[in-house]
Length: 640
Ligand code: ADP
Image 1 (cartoon, rainbow, N blue to C red):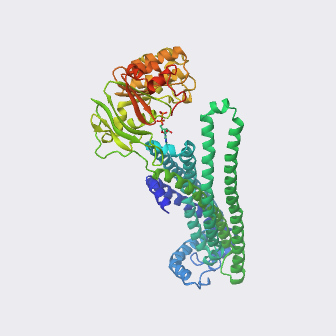
Image 2 (image 1 turned 120 degrees about the vertical axis):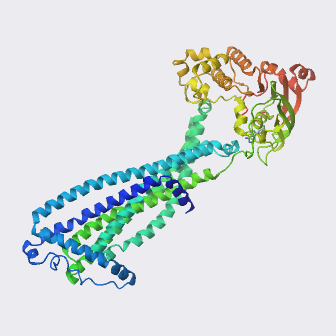
């Protein structure tokens, strides 16, 4: 119920479209009922001899259609009797009016037929038009809600902190924001489309049925409660199994995403078959659950159809009884009644199907809302100030950090100063805590103990936005987007002129290779930048950082085996980037370390040595040992 209320809140944003749609839908249903009703005078006109009508006065035609007047038995059940009493005056007025028209029609048979024909055609046309408009507005509302939800879930996920992403697979997030939202889409649009329209039609037709014969109506709609019970039972089952089905799709997407992302490794290890089997397992599981869901859904239609047949038979028997035995119903009324009754089947069927659709959608909604309700953001102080500039520098005060309460400390009691404008290199074995050091400096995580100070103020006192504006990170895994080279360098900033982009590319020693690309700066570089080499990707990332012009530069130096020319170019590009900025380099190469004014050596999360290259060599400790490894520091694999 809570979920439905939440969905209604979204629907409410489009209340006007919905309102107009309902009004138009009601008009459409009214016209459709009117069209059925138009058969009544037609039948009367055809089956009543003209002479008879002329004998009887227009307002009193007992022989034509008022046989039920006075003779219709009253209901025994008080509620129905009460309803009957309430409606009697209206029914009488309508009867009288229709009889007048019918009497006129009987005396002017052909003319009446033409008029009725024209009226039916015109109302049919108008009905089509208003129904179309109503359907369109419903679809508009439904789709708009889904668009809003998709946007909201994406924005919400974007705001989450890194641990949120570590706890969830990309496949899971994708499944929620695409698959689950689309099941909601189907549910919402069908509710909007048929869910509102059908009840209106049902009510209209029921009124018509009731007008034609209250008792026959009662005999024919006895199946409604049975349908209600069936819908309830099936709906619950469908919702449960839908949730399971969505989960299985999540697994399918997970395997897909992992395989495609790691396609190089898959191929290099010849693991295609293994991956194929892994996928098959997930795929079969999804297939089975979906099939199960369909098996349950599909029982519903034949069941409904059978109930419809029972209702029709019951109406026929009851009708025959009322006409032949009691004489309380005319043949024309009965005929129109049967037509109207047959029109009742479709909206009831649609409505019951929608219920199943809604249950599927609600299962999706539950999963979507679960993500929307997960609030995992780094707390920002309400009075967080804007960091205008880093004037003095950054210092770590007794900083310890662990990724979660059960894990080991990744950093222990770190106390270091990073003065403004200095280049600080961080070196250490793989797993020493270098990436973690940078992660907490950029405030991807907060320290478990201790504090990081910027100009003697806690990092947590500043707004995240202002902090991140001052930082640029060049990582080992260069993140490029399936966009043009120019847009990749400018990354989202449309206001930057091409000249500035070229200038940055030149400083990053990237201009030369960019110019050689088929469309220069307008070349699309493919997802993950697959169309350019590793060294080139790195230089694009440097160009992006140069363009951002950050105060604090974090450089996770690439370790991938670059040829010496590429390496020299990257070195030169780095020098251009580093110049005059506070820089922290996770260094893997001796040449890079030499650029640093201070080197911090980390081991098992602790600072074990600090100083210049020469000092540390003289010390003949960790650093000296590391540098003896051909001047290349340990990590040959990306550490993050
Ligand atoms: P380095 O960059 O020096 O290779 P890291 O900073 O990546 O080292 O890792 C330091 C320690 O923290 C390692 O023991 C690693 O297993 C652990 N670690 C790194 N990232 C996470 C994470 N997201 N969750 C839990 N533990 C982590």
